[in-house]
Picture 1: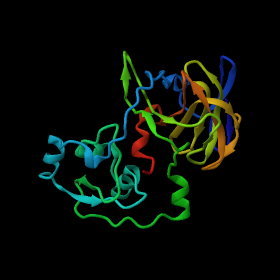
Picture 2: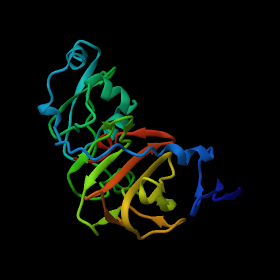
Picture 3: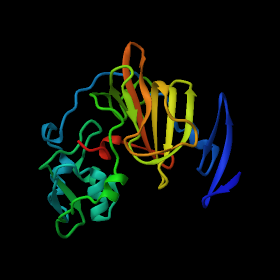
Length: 247
């Protein structure tokens, strides 16, 4: 253990790698539970989701409706209204396989007036998340097979496609991981951590400072399919990436 730039850095010895991770305990790296299969699921926007009782009840609750504009995410909307993303998800009964769309009306519980969210500044754009690779989602957050659940997204790609950092940060793991293949993890410095797995090759190494959009790996082929497994965490809590990625 040693101090670096105001942070406490703990060095853990793991099989085949040494990972420097700025987290409370070694248990952090145990958060990866191998996702169950790659059952293909077509994306269904919120406008195609069946009406839900919680959504109907939300109309009677105190709050306002926010009209989504291009490029907005649930995360950005929640920050603008000063509330947790989970509160908006629960009030609108948003399923794991759906994402908000432009012109969608989202109920904001407890708000007294709708906010006009200002255009993003360059700094704000840098802090927002981007897709690690462009492709169809073939397995969604919480998709299940047997006793396992997907803790992220499986995104279809072509073998060798560049996998890009979704946000600036420090590489805290870059090595083979059982069940995940060649895996890279980035600490974004504000509690968020992203993981990129099932790669053919890693282009970044432990300790690298990477920027949003930097190629960090190449997509690999696993079980007859080529895809990138992407996870987003806040501390040790798995988050649904769809709520943070632009649509």
